[in-house]
Amino acid sequence: MLRELRIKNFAVIDEVALELSPGLNVLTGETGAGKSIILNALGLVSGNRVSADVIRHNQDEASVEALFDDVPSPVRQRLQDAGFAADHELIIKRIISRSGKNRVYLSGSLCQLGLLSELGGSLVHIYGQHEHHTLLEPESHIRLLDGFAGLGEQAGEMNDKFRVLAATWESLQRTRELTEKRKREKGFLQTQTEEIANARLRAEEEEELEAKKNILLHAEKLYQTCLEGEELLYEGESALISRLGRYGNKLREMAHIDTGLQAAVDLVVAALANLEEANRELRRSSERVHFEPGALEQLEDRLAEIHRLKRKYNGTIAEILEMHAAMEAELQALDRGEEEIPTLERAFETARQLAWEVAGSLSQERRGAAKRFKKEMEKELKDLGMPDTHFEVRFLEAMEREDDPPFFIGGKRLGEWGLDQVEFHFSPNPGEPPKPLAKIASGGELSRLMLAIKALVLAPGEIPTLLFDEVDAGIGGGVAEIVGKKLKQVASAHQVLCVTHLPQIAALADSHHAVRKEVSKGRTATRVMRLNAKERVDEIARMLGGLKITDKTRRHAEEMVRGK
Image (cartoon, rainbow, N blue to C red; front, side, top):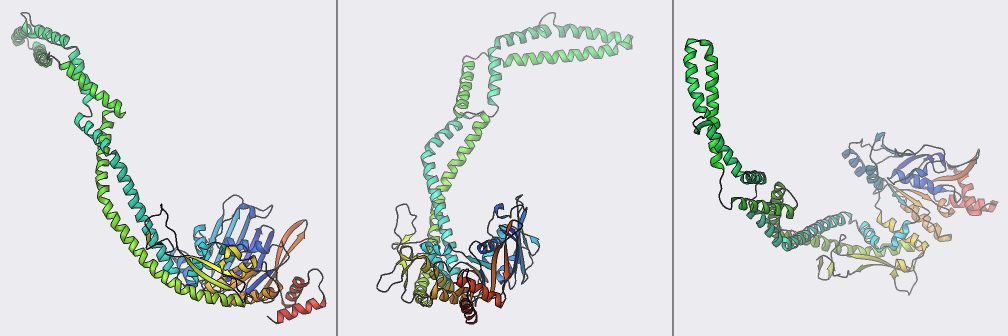
């Protein structure tokens, strides 16, 4: 329950503090005084998004702070799971800054807005002037019926099962489409794969072939040079090796006479060994130079094939080999995809069967609840001054479309809400057939319909604080008193904070706050004050009589307050 609300520098509010009570709390005041601004500020505590435009002129920050006690156990558990203190009291504070550095605090600890948004809906529900228009949207009707029947858990399970079903269908379709696409590309891929495989490319082959080509182009010159070297070193009469060998023998004899020549002997021996090795290398090189007919042509043909593949696949040999590996992997994936399809089809059928089982059970419970909901709604609406109202919950059949997934069985379509599409029908006049709410309900009727639904759908303690922003729009007279009594009834199980212009509702309040707009030193500011018994009578007299308040008006106001 909301115990205290503090607002600072928010819109035209300078600083206000509200101490709220259990039961029915009302906010009254002239139009434009700032009543709805207070509820908007409280919306920030429940996690609504906000812009810096709400900050009061000439201020850098706005803040909203709320104290809740008797915090519901699911909220405490979620706080504990998120690492926050899980006490029965919770202080929520939001600071909005022009710099964009907005902050959220839970009992003094910083938290993310996402967590606050998650918790806010379990602490406060704001029923604004626009909310009754959601009744004009049939999509909301099934949620309201489930809320009345207490089928939220089953509806959540249905939603989970449908998500699994949709995901398996999407996976199956994606695999089928990919497989079909790959089948169309398979022949092309196989041709390319075989072409590259048959080419037997090697990463360094091109460089090796270019080197061989260069040798073949200069084969004659290389051969002659090697022969010339052999002639010079070994073959001729004046070959260097023979001459140096004879000189070495002579020098070795002299070294016996003069040992100082031994170093020269060693050098000559080494030089002779190097010349002999050089001769052997020249011989081997001359033997490698072949003059086979067509060798150069074959080599050039191989290089031409490599260059063609490089142009075709727009890459180096290494990149072509990588492409080949990728193509082979894709062909293998195609084979695996074809193997996966039966497995995915079985998974889809299993998911569909599980979803249909939940959907069938949920549909049966909904149809039973719809009958009870009809009776309870007609009773509630009678209490709200609509005694002859006829209310129905109709179950609609979904039409199959060509592009629908195969979620139809026996002419019924399975969706995230199960098998059912629900629409509320309504007739406020005897003898007139019920029609969809969107076609016949007036604004005042919608307000009362929504109030009746809220009285039936909201379980005691489910959401501790309910905020009604001018739920009385479009009604007056005796109906206003009936609506007030219904709000009072709702307030017996929930704390209710209600903005109203109707004295019939304000007179029923357990706690009454007046909102005033004042001008001080050239600036407008909204003030909120909690009214005592005498001030309440004065405020309700104002609401009854406008600018001129007579003694009769004041007595009427006293009677209304005493009669609550």
